[in-house]
Length: 384
Image (tube, rainbow, N blue to C red; front, side, top):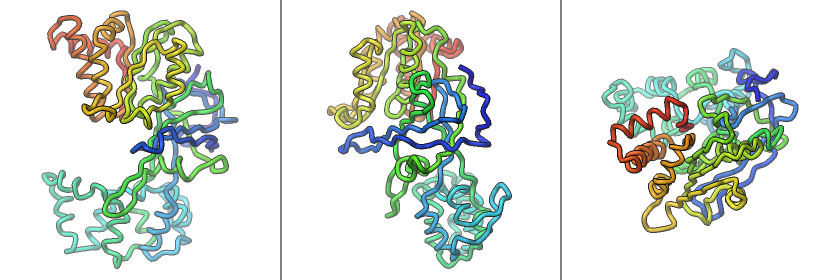
């Protein structure tokens, strides 16, 4: 399937899709809010391959937009020149064009200049590279509105305010469906970000845009982001091993749909992990059905909070060490999707340990083996 379709829609000209399905996957007792979303690509001409991502241009929370407008003493109707040079109302610019949560360097510089002595410590942290960690600690959990609220008497003209904000960027989400299976639609698996800091409720811009502020009648601007580095093996008979805890399961749901549509008989092995089986087993019915009918050759689950000692996907890899190595020796491709800061590193470490343990080689030789998998494009990551 071509990833360069004849369509007028792209990142520069996103398609106004329709958000048709918004379903909670995690149970009511879960500490997380993970949702399954579907958007329609009908009449877009957009095509995608499994492994690709969907780019989404979200809009900001109108309540936060209004709070900022009020705090700078504006009414929202004032005309401002947006980042693209177009004239529009302050309200529309803050709603659709700018990042209004995480403060930009330009905003912080302007805030320090306006505040003077009261912001001396912040100014010192910004100016001294050696105090980078102090600055990060100070900024953690703080948004633009917190600085505005801390100095409510500062004057900001509408144009001046938007000029120190960053452009609102699109978010990329791993596609959780095969177009061969779902047709003119895209499925996404998104953890809705909600938390509290400094006595205020916070929310992820794009995740709550999907969860709370869209629907069939609200166009969602989207485009396809090609990910050639995260492709299934060309031969559908090749075994694949997939490690995707949490929302990292998304592309592997797509892989499994694609492999069923293609046929070829290749073996499929999935490692999935979350906190609790009762409330966090995403796509449980689908995965168990695939396991039952044999399409999912092996399914290893790791629910970290269901026992006293926490169990993660890398622990399941260790338990399955012999078979895991045997699959690699058969030519299996190894995929990882999810948290890059910790999970992917732990999985990489365990993969090397599996190779060393089962082959009897040195740690250095195991490193070379795994490096060889990467060079031959049999070890692929989609981490964030």
